[in-house]
Length: 250
Image (cartoon, rainbow, N blue to C red; front, side, top):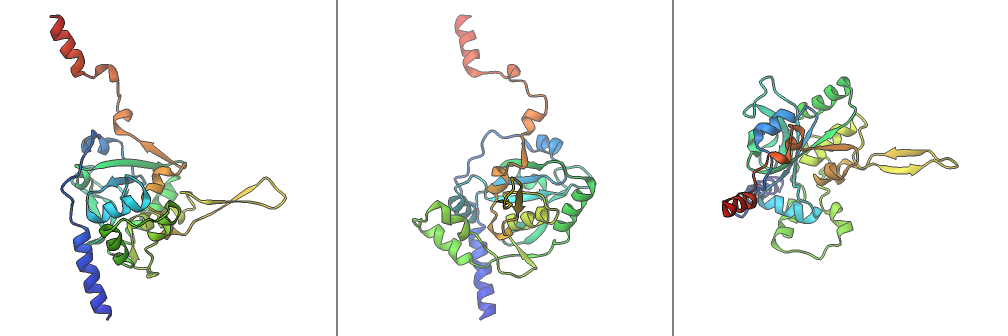
């Protein structure tokens, strides 16, 4: 029975990983600009175009369907493996930045990490290379692709709690959430008021409840936009309507 389940899971994973033809890339920074500003420890959020990406974006009501952690490479090149991700078919792997050069992406950066904490963060994900993707409840995702259920927004997060409980399995946002929780860095923690005090204590949410958009929503991550980081000046932009006006005057 276990063999049949795994075979079915692999077949569904292959189906859900296939890209959709109607993907639209907006005017985002080219990969060389992203390479200039991205740093080890940064999260790269991806607006994916696969069937499973569509399901995740629907369930989370978000643009972002995938998350990777940038760990860097000896040779700072977009062709060198430098992103740790949990892929549906390949599991936890190291991939190059240029894998996502044709996608809409966003950089989210943790603030205030010491060099020791950053090393622990990167080592956490690197130690999990080779882990398999957690395919538990993959049938549920398939069901939500086929039909759009009337699921209240407040319950959608629970629908993506894809935790099998096996330590050698992970999904993209779960892996990254665990890595940051291992150094007690906040994402969207619960806040509890201490009795008879103004003090607040923070509590980590369970890592399986995190989805890619949470790193964007978190007030503890800085959004880094390569265009603005690299001497952006809108006065240097050439606008078509101004060129048309100049031609008419002439």
